[in-house]
Amino acid sequence: MNLYATQLECLLAILAIGTLLTDAFRPAADKRKLGYVLAALVAGALAASYLMPTLPEPLFHGMYRLDSFALFFKRLFLLATALALATEIAKGAPLAVAGTRRALELLQPPIEAGALTEIAADLQRAWMSEDAAEARVAFREKRKPQFKGR
Image (cartoon, rainbow, N blue to C red; front, side, top):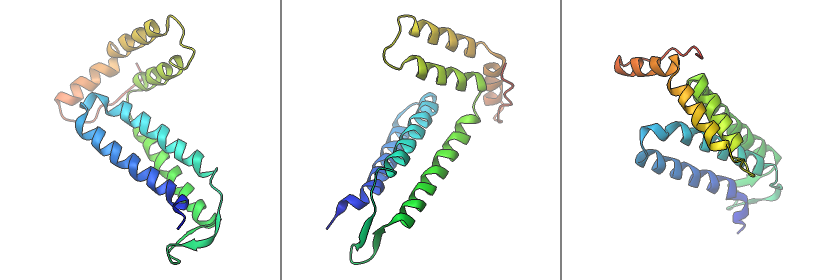
């Protein structure tokens, strides 16, 4: 039996279980980072699906196929998942999202000497922004924050 055909489903199942466990045991402040990591891993799974060749014969007594039609729908669902994650991330404070994206860019090898200083300055700017104050007030008032990018 060829288990190669189910590697994408196995990868996503492991990713889902890992995400659930990480989400359950990490502080709430780390949830945005988890979203970025999850989006990157889903994008990686989508890219990996393009490396998978199709298999002409059905597997598991005809119950499973890995033809181009099946791969199309696997990619479609992975793309929908990535878009849903991106939408959730985009709902965050614009300064925080931009700072996180910039930090990820600065931490790409080779890491420059002043990268951590720049990241700390971006974090300070985001924390002292009007959006951060709005987030704290909205949290106390139990409502959704209205971010303005300032």
